[in-house]
Image 1 (cartoon, rainbow, N blue to C red):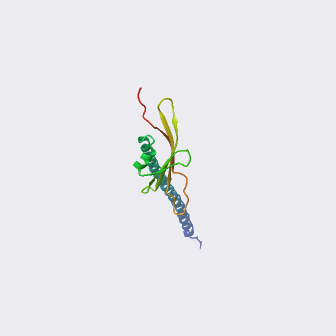
Image 2: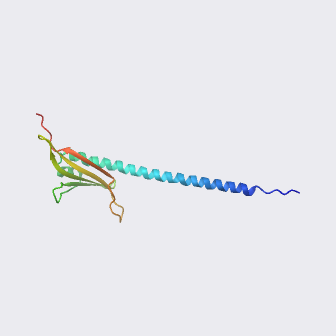
Image 3: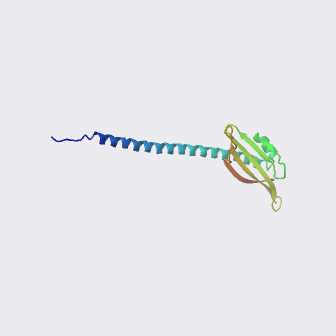
Length: 152
């Protein structure tokens, strides 16, 4: 009489290994989806911040550097400087939870009648409850002409 071992434990072990391999693959896929969602949200926030910064910049350019009029048009706040570094405009966008600050620099004169002003624009997200404000989401340096040049 010959004795044969059952092959059931080997088959069960093989299926158990396959379940572990598929679980590992599913965990990797889940991490990839979470990472892509985070990238998508960051990209959307940066795009919105750039759009809001552009709105503030173009308004200042339209008023040829008159920050008071630009702040009134934007519905923002004019922040006078305590030193000679230049005034600032702060505009809060509650629907996007973004805060745009334009720090105007000194007026620079070029040859003739043309003069221009430099500024730095930074956009921050509203900080979460109990946390400090993080680094800006978007930063850009700009310059605009203060007065229209007259043709000679």
